[in-house]
Amino acid sequence: MRTGLINPMTKLNVKQQLILLFLVMVSPIFLLHWYGNIKTEHLLKNHVTNAYVELIKQNYTLINRDIDTVSKITTTMIQNPVVQKLVPSEQDTVIERVRKFDSVDKLLSNNSIPLNGGEAVYYSLYVYDPNDYYFFAPKRQINQTGVYFFNDATKPSWFDDAVKRNSGAYMAMIDTNVGLSRVKTYAYIRAVNNVTIANDTIGILVATQMDKKIGESLRSVSLPDGNIYFTDWNDRVMSATDPSLIDTVLSLPPEAAIPDNVNSQGNLDLITDDSIYVVNYDRSSQTKLIYQIPVESLLKQQNELKRVIQLISVAYLLLGCIVMIYFWRSLMTPLQRLAQFVRAYEPGKLVPETPFKGRNDEVGVLVGALYDMARRLNVLIHYKYNMDLKQKESQLQLLYQQINPHLLYNTLESIYWKSSLEGKTESADMIKELSKLMKISLSRGRELITLEEELEHASAYVSLQQKRYKYEFEVNWVIPDAARLILIPKITLQPLIENAMIHAVKNMGEDGEIRISAMVEGERVTIKVEDNGHKAVDYAALDRLLSGDKPDHASGYGIRNIQQRIKLHFGNQYGLGYKEREHGGTSATIILPMITEEQQKRDV
Image (cartoon, rainbow, N blue to C red; front, side):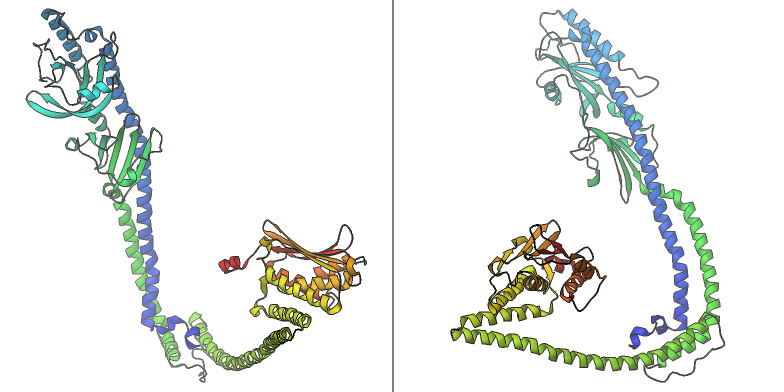
């Protein structure tokens, strides 16, 4: 009792409370500082990412333009008659071969000239010459452009792959000789097919230094301490702003992988703790353009904002110190007196006179309220003590009253077995039905039971009444299995069946009929108790009774009780109603929700 009503703050001394107050005042500034940094960082990352998404599209367009230019030049050279005539053949004289070689060599050199001071793409033609008809031509690449003939021993490793692709162009990292050096270059490779002979390949046209040409486009974009990569589909770097990374495999986060179900072209952006990645990909060309921007370089732009927030934090901290000192001096004496009272107070003990009665500020109100609360607490303690005694007495009385129904039920069961053993089957059956009524009426203290149990109770009642009064009317039960597990207030059907027996079919003999049926309709269940009685029924009076307009306890108490219990458990949209049957008689209709015990346990 004492722990539940005393304010937890009173367990601290005044000094601790003021320090706590100071922390509460200062903590919002630190939270604001932390939140502002996170929010600013988040907004900055998003804005930068969106900007680079647009920039990477333009950059990728420039790269594609350079590749398209190379593609057009290679197409023009392949269709050139000079190239088409360069077919190793013993029918040509040496001078004719020299002229063909010289013409193609000049064609390649003329197209390898750099434009507008930019990087040049060098074109070379590799021709398979196993019989060494062009013995006078260079056998290994010395210059960056030219025509080179080779045999099976000197065939480049990528030659067969290019022939298999027929005239389809592709880009790959290859090894090539430049003078005496062996270098790697990103090349545009395309087979030169003979236009006069089907499936005949003249040679392979190779455009080298594509990595430098693409790198020229990459260098046109400036990233803050970031890198730009042009890679193949497997993230092997073909060109980059850092040339040392060429021909290495780029390590990207798993989230930057291109899903298989995406479009042939598109963009992907990813923000990690360390970097921002913006990817533009083209599935048809199997290439990617990747921007990698370190997050640390972007956060440098936040330093000025951080310094401003830090200055505000320091100023607020000083203000908080001044406020704390003021409250320390103005609240010390009353709060210490209040703390002493709280430590010494014992529930039920006489409360002394309230101090600081002349103080009208919040502290005075708090002290007076706390002393008054202590006095009221003493009153409540005595009141609760008396109520606990009365509650214990009521529980004992309730337990005593519960003994009688169980004793009667157990006694009926004993009489039933004794009558059965003595051969008095009819009496035993009636006792059995009566014991069922007692059992379900108790229903282990539950107010809601299953329709199956309610039907058992109602069936026992009908059987008992028919045997008791020798009634000959017919009772039909039409209950689908789906409705038998729903919950219904106990002793709901029995009063309705009793009304149908007494007021309808009691004196009809074999012509009387009572029909109990149920039908499941979505989330609702409709239960009907119908009779074919011929007596006139005032349905308007029944409606008034059920709606509460005429709460007459002298008549209709049973059906009104059913109505109230249904609405209490399930809501006003459910309940009981009466109407006349189409072929005579009365129909009592109960509307219930489709709720089972399992559903009720899950909801709880």
